[in-house]
Length: 313
Image (cartoon, rainbow, N blue to C red; front, top):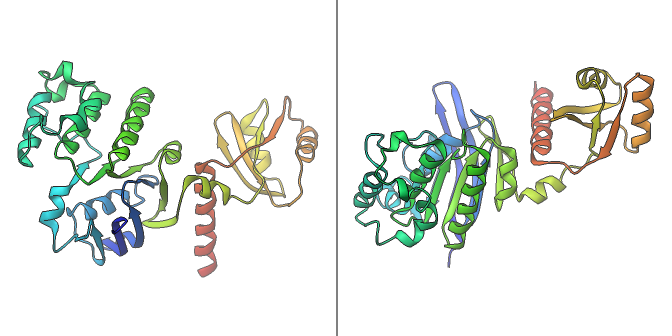
């Protein structure tokens, strides 16, 4: 039995002189939550639209559940669910009318697949007579997800589903995705939020239309080889300026109230840094060694890409 839900090979897409995605290749396993992680403009939406047969690639091919995305596009549209980044349901229809409409499009009913969506839909069912346009952001998100699932798709595509949604709704949403995974549904989710990457089984870090790396979140974090220091003082911005001008600085970035710092030297200690900070008249300084986050790793991969481009020029 084929374990791959999606096989992508050398997919590229250009818009005039702009290359949106470049030679993307990856295999996504059945029943996994696969994250496309990257900022706006990284190519996440373009790739999702190609895989959902809404766009044609310029190069390469992809197979979804054994079906070619070009030749078998009609069959693919029956087995995928798609939740675009912008709320795209009918604002003037009620919650119930939207769900009934999408069920009828796929020749099914709400009752037939209610068990699949009940954990999600139950949050908005008390408001089923309310127009979709009058729902809050979190409720719109739940309705859109219910509509994408009502025909029980084999593969679910979610394009930045938690953008602009409050923290509680974001947490609830990811709990729902775990339940869908347990149902055997393959989930491909794109997000610019690096903290959501750890909730996926595997992720692709995307920038400028390319995969910088594809791996489990843990393996990507473990690939960060430099010792990472979190540094804090009374004057964060003077600290940032001083570290940027420090001869041994390899990288320094703002993370909340602290700075994440790596050193060019291999054996630098916290005491070495504290001594240097004291000589620079920084007060109430704190340093600790921390594990790299996905965001730290993303920045590191970006730096490598920039160095590679510079060396070729």
